Image (cartoon, rainbow, N blue to C red; front, side, top):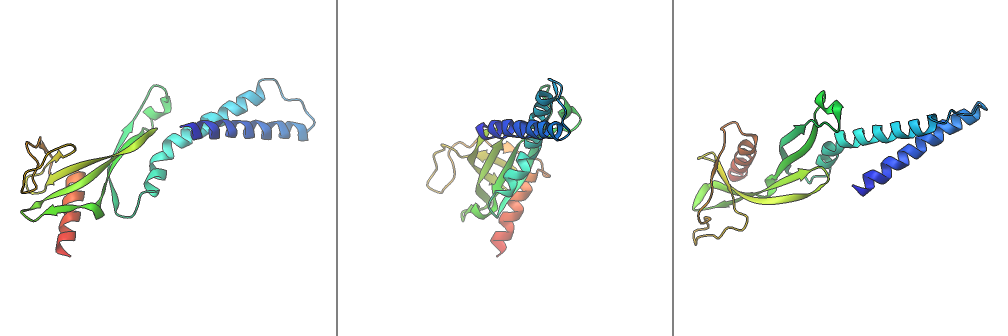
Length: 178
């Protein structure tokens, strides 16, 4: 967040400098409000650009095998233009290279769900997916039975068309076939 603040202030200063140089080139004195208005417009423009592109820029830095399964778009009163074009505020991804299976339960997949949010550090949550039952549970802090299953799982049902269910189960099935 500090980087965005510094860069936006720098963009404002550079834009004001270009406006000042333009007036200076034509040997004119700029009105008192022009340079601050140009700086403010540049700061606002950079802030909007950074807010709308952070998800794409973050996705490009993800390692190979990471699959984005959900994007959450929001609108906010602090950014009125977001009512017309909602911006991605957070997204979730899974690492298809890190899927683990239990031989005793081959349709269950252990994986990490990565949560990305604007201005927040990424967070990884270990999850267990039951592909045949279309349900999942978190295993963060869970204790496990000797057969590798979590004790007292709190299953959450998933829709058959859920992108997370498809990403985990289809990728895990293709890894299993190889």
